[in-house]
Length: 179
Image 1: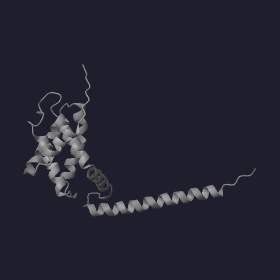
Image 2: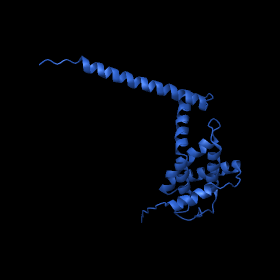
Image 3: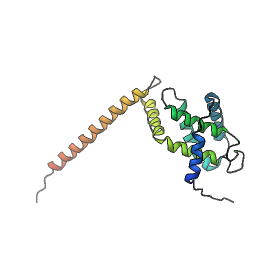
Image 4: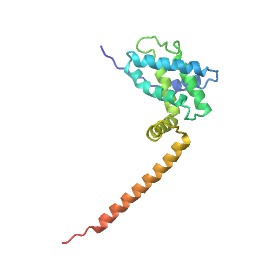
């Protein structure tokens, strides 16, 4: 028997998780990163609910962004991500992780909240990673390199649009019709 449930996350729930994530408790980053990597490996190698599977890639992206030495995160984002990773690795959190079917629901809510809060930085990191894979070719690639490439691509894109518009306007003027 398959059942489908819809869950609406209220502002009160979001506020509750934000308070947890803005906690200033000291977190051992090395241990937390190691534990989140173990958790990701377990999630990828065991059968999971679809809603959990949908949260693996965003969590991996957050982790990659956090550990990438060539990407610089603000101190606030680092603290926020560490708090999230710490929460996610707790087995006995709001809903104990070993609770059948819904055990990772609160963890997925945390992933959603964090992804929304740092969405722009995740998008920038994704673009940075793509540029690095294209242009770096096993060489060092910094955010400065990425900024230069973005500027060049932006200029090139504007030039191409302008040239395309000019060529279309010339085509329209060169058409002659005889009645």
